[in-house]
Picture 1 (cartoon, helix red, strand yellow):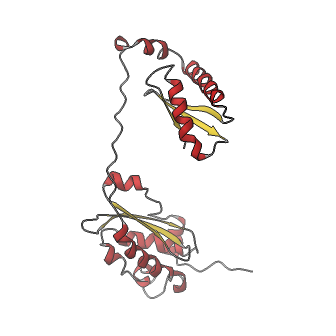
Picture 2: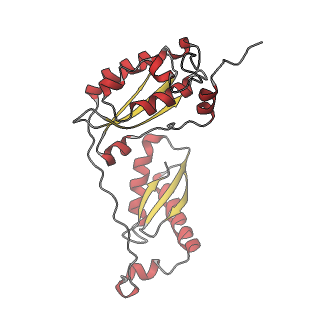
Length: 237
């Protein structure tokens, strides 16, 4: 019979309601013009995500994901909270006792078995070693908000397309997609998942190898131009 590992009340509370759990993606870092430092430990206990000012090496924001022992969740939550505002070098000098101090019910009693926190040293060592490899990604160009055309400015193509109901638009696009796939000799299944005011058509593909999707998207975009020259096709992620 197995027993549940003993955790302090504070650690159990963080286990149930973590404060900093989550992940950053490269796009998040690019938008904020910060470097994304993301590493996992060799025991598979968790992964940290730090957004770092690459001029000062200060950690602007931090999150974590935990996959290991129950103790890994509150420990990484506390670590993530502690590193914000520190330099990477300073953060990577944090010890188990410093992290665990946020989780103790009394100052002298560890929140968990210290052996469960051994992975923190490896994780922080890897984080410091990874910093020189972190680069600043270019800031993405945000899409311009689409403005609906005034009816007085409609082109002949607009007049044939814009007044149609959503169902008729989807039906027309579905027909074009089926014919285009047949012309290609493709057995792929494709259906319209979204039709937007900015002329974007979102297509869901089934039974299509990922490497073939860009070719199909290009072909379908070319085909739907016969309906309206501004229509474009993108694949559902």
